[in-house]
Image (cartoon, rainbow, N blue to C red):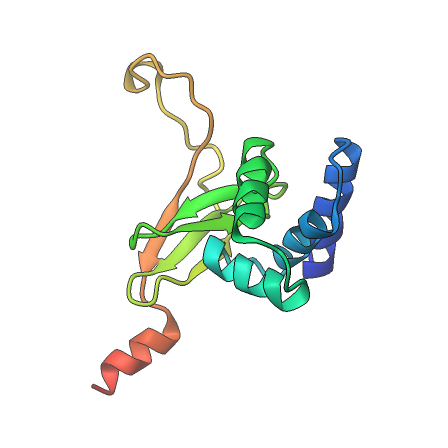
Length: 149
């Protein structure tokens, strides 16, 4: 299983391999994206980036995220609240577990879903580009909160 440090280093290494200029601002955004796949929003990434590099602008963070998504180095995952979250864990095939109350997203690696595909008749002429599965439920914290209300 990939660790937080591996994700950070792999993303930075992958960007270097692509010849992407790693300015201080871009590096900070890449470093913020490391972690235990918390699936941060753009606003959360901006806040954490500004903690490390106060002069980084909102436009720089948003443009960097747009570029990373376009390059396939970061995935956008939308929760039920409609807010986009960014997932740097693109090298390991996985799905997500969503808490319907607090909107927390976790990476999961369930058995038996990797081979899931659509038959030719169900594709309606589409060329499939990927598969996103989101399992929905209540996280332990929200479940406990609701039980005590």
